[in-house]
Structure formats: structure tokens, C-alpha cells
Amino acid sequence: MRNSAYPHEITKNLKMLEFATEVFVLGDYPILFKSTPKTFADLGCMDYMLALSSTRIYVNTALELGDFDKKKAYNYNAHIIEQSLKYVTSGNKKILEDSVSYYKELKRNNILYPTKQMMFPSQINSG
Image (tube, rainbow, N blue to C red; front, side, top):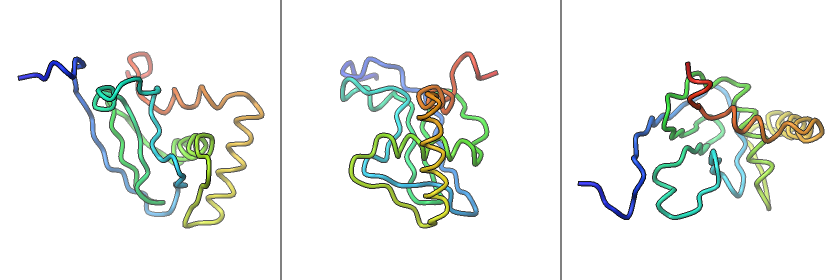
């Protein structure tokens, strides 16, 4: 029985991905949503990513994610840097420095937002 308080169909692809080396930064706003949740019910059906450590990330998407390579990790890091208000950190100083440099490059070239859309699968790019 479906709860009428949650009108969205919830079909998810949940993944816990782990890298052999540290690739993620962590920040004070660690969840990267595909789009901004507007209601509490949206949280159950929206695509999002959450780095749990510098080597692990939890991904919850409606469509199959596909490969999650180091480039996608740097894109995730850039968005965590953008939305964090107080701090970003990493267990690896070089990853932190490289992520900040990459973030600044994306901002300078005005391509930060499009990289967020490419992080998540869509009907257009999933096939």
C-alpha cells in the first residue's frame, strides 16, 4: 500500500562505491542533490550523493548511474566546495588542493552548474 503523503513513485538504484585511494572532500553541507528538495516528501524520491569518507560515497538515483570515475569524484568535490559554508576537508592535502583548483576553474569558466547535471543520470544521457 502506498502512503498518499508520498505521491512520488520511488524506484531507486542505491550504490555504495569505494575507491582504493582518497578522492573525496567532505564539507559542512555534504549531500549533493540533483535538484533542490522543495518538500520533506521530496527527500525520499530525489537523486543525491553523499560522501561518507574520503574513499566512500553513497549514491541514490532513479536511473542506473553508470561508471563513477575519478573525474566524477572531482565534480562531486567541486559542488561540495560550492555549497559548503564553513569548511571543506580531506584526509589527503593534495586531493583538497586539486579539488579547490578544479572548483575555481569551473567557476571561472562558468561551467559549474552543467557539471552537476552531468553527475546524475537522465533519460537523455542514459543509453
